[in-house]
Image (tube, rainbow, N blue to C red; front, side):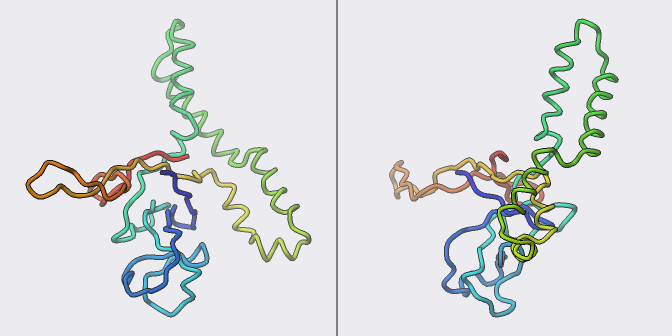
Length: 201
């Protein structure tokens, strides 16, 4: 199952899109309000139609783990950018020339330095211009897309998480017959907590 990821300043989040009718069953659980503010139920009265229950998360920039919420696996832009694949292609192409591990390391380091220096691609700039052009005037831009939101949208974080699923249910008493109730995200237990299994997209 593929879940949309919501990026806040400190987290990548997966939320449940179900409408919350009653806050009582969710007491002490985290929710995302207005698509950007994390709060715990109930710490104040709010419009529940603006709240989405957080069901999985990945802390960013050393942020704390949200207690009681499943974790997403660690994310590395290094892997996502294909540095490992590029190093392997470099090694395969030049293996007959006797490429050393030092040269492979230098290639990888150079790639990473170039990526850090040029954070925004031409495609990112086009995206920002399109976001601005789609609005009728500058005041709408400031209202609908805060400057930080436009810049944040250009950071190269994944937009979806494809979660592996597994059946859940129970076995009939005295019979080896598994009765399936549905599917749930496949998870493993780590030192940090329960972590979903899957990949970023």
